[in-house]
Length: 162
Image: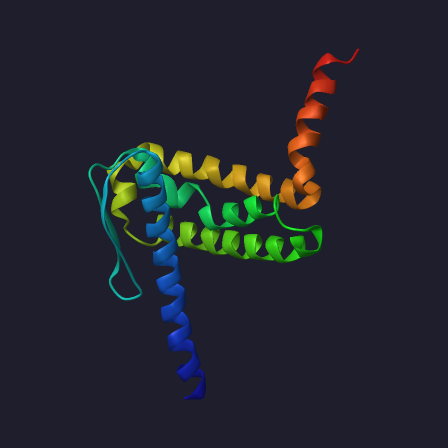
């Protein structure tokens, strides 16, 4: 009885956050691709909806390919003091794990209209994106902000050294 008291609100909050993150990512990519945004709705019970003037593959597939909240915390690492980097890495990892679980759930177990709109190419793009971001976050946590200096430098030396 007591466990059920805590589980139901937790499940509703997780469902709301997954929906909110999903619809926020749609909205962000609609905004940066210059689409008019007419409405935004996120709910734990009835799902979410964003109305824009026109849907394109970038807007439709963005919640499954881009971990927007994780990238936000990664960008914060460039302006925050070094003693707070652990906290930012934690939140970035937390949001990436949530993104990964939501993407797997949405692509395998939930019938999503976004994926049905572009059925053949969407799963290939999602898979490539997931592998890219898994490697990106691994290297970013390993090398930190130096990642953007070390990899180009190493590549340059590798290409042009004798």
